[in-house]
Every structure is written in C-alpha cells, then in structure tokens.
Image (tube, rainbow, N blue to C red):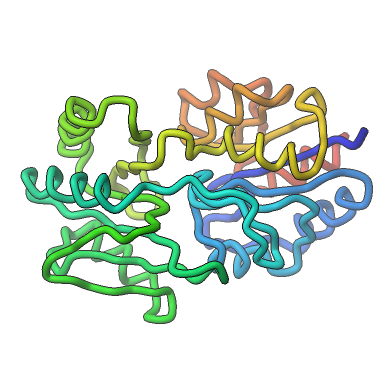
Length: 272
C-alpha cells in the first residue's frame, strides 16, 4: 500500500512570502508518482489553489482547519459546519469583550466562500483585511451575523484578551465547539478560532483515509503550529519544521534542521 504525505501550508510548506520554490515543486511532484500527496490547511479552497499552482495532489484537500474536505475538482467530500444559532451566540459573547470576529462561511456547493467582518476592526484585523481583495468574498457589516453554513469564526488580537475570551466561551459552550488559540506569525498577534467540535485536521485525515483507502501506519504529516497537533497524534511519523512552535516540536517524531523558508518538507522527501 502507498505511503501518504500530508503537509500544512503556512510556515511549513509555503515560504514566508507564500511562494514555493522550483526545488520544492520538483521534489514534491516526483514523490507524487508513487505516493499519496495532500495538504491540510487553515486556508480556503481558493487561496490554497492559488498557492499550490504547479503542485500535483493525489488526495482531497483538508481546508479551513478541517471544516471542509474537497478535491481540486471542487467535489465536496465532507463538511463540519457551525450552525447559525451558535455562530450568532459566539459573536454576541465576543462583543462583550469589545471584539468582533471574522466569519468564514460556505456560500454554495461550488466552493464559493464569504469572508464576513464587522465595520469595527482592531489594528490586527485591519492588517489581515489589507492582504485580501474584494474578489475574496469580503463583506463588512455594521451588525455582524453568522450565516447558515459557517466554516469557522476567527478572532484576532492581543493574547490575554483572546485567552479571557476563550475561557468565557468555554463556560458557555463547553465542548460543543472546538477552540484553537495560537500565535499568528504574519501579523504578530494571536488568533482564536472557533469550529464545529469535529472540525480539525485529524478528523479531516480520517475523511481522506476513507476516500483514498490508506493505512495510518503509512502516514507522514508536516506542521509548525498548534492546529497541527491533532494530525501529529494520528500519524505514524509527525515532522515539525525548525521554525515550529516549541510545543509542537515536543510532540513531533522528528524536528527538521530546515525551516519552511529553507524548503524543509522537500529536503525531507528527497532524503527518503
């Protein structure tokens, strides 16, 4: 049975400028000839496709931290969505802390996505918005509401504020939703992501496993941040980048001597 390799994108497979080197493309595509190759990312379908131009994939993409599993041909394999009632309740509770989230939702079965936000933005959110275009589905609202198909709700800001918010939300929603609190390297703040309780990269891998029919003993994953830990626990071989968070390195089978900017994933694949 074939080996399978699944990599995170930001700060793992992608360089810090969000590009891929020709070396990485060559090594990855050569490996795809005799292995199952896939990605697991917090990114949307559209952004992932843009960043992976020139890369061959043989497994469905795990997107939006596992809330959406889809093929390159836009076939939806699985979704794990927050319903509108819970989404609105999360927004309501966050407003008590003076902060409003980004709401990323699925518009239709053609994988069109909406990126909703309040007209009230903090400085960290403004930096994020500046990186997007109108074609990315951006919509601003004086009164932000969730939709019927929410992929994830994301707060960005100072670490302590988000830790306080996470604790508050846990007292209300408990384990009915999933919480991811981690550093955001591009902007230099923290993010708090709220998801369906089964939306994570580990559950995403299990959906891909069912679709591609492989054994977990043949699975190798690559990552750098705390939202990768679920798939680290699932895989036989969990590979952390040299630039990974320290807590992630502690859970890894192997820590690479190379960073994402040094083509770490490609060097590992070439060494096999």
